[in-house]
Length: 185
Picture 1 (cartoon, one colour):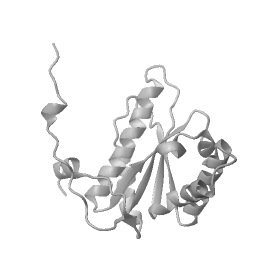
Picture 2: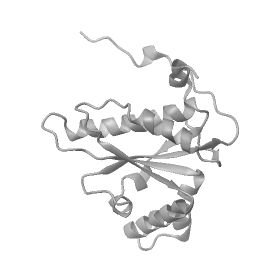
Picture 3: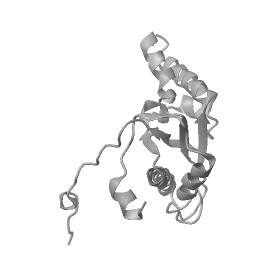
């Protein structure tokens, strides 16, 4: 697939099914992530792959996080939390792991980790895989971060759900760049 085609036509794919990306496809996904802009070559990211029984364990962690916030949470909320990781055969937690730097602020390093996540999405699309970037409450919950073993200075920037496309890819909407670009000065 041509680079511009990937950039202009990538779409989020919410309906995913097995199989998960193969080891060779994963190698490409993570190689693409490692090409993210990275001022200072700090590599302020890391990735957790969650699949198979790990998805059920993550669902239990999500349910525990719901209970941690609301001990009276309804059964439906707990079931929803447990089922969230089951929507794809592979989840990749993209973690911003800022490094001490006198030149590169933490906010810039978090942006670099987000660019790494985008690289994974682009590489997935280029390989014909389906992917969607999800955040939501669980990505910002310290209970979840602790349960995944994140250090105090780390944060989840994305849960990338990856798999085979279930159905047809949707066509991205046509947007006019002029609606978003202006001259200054």
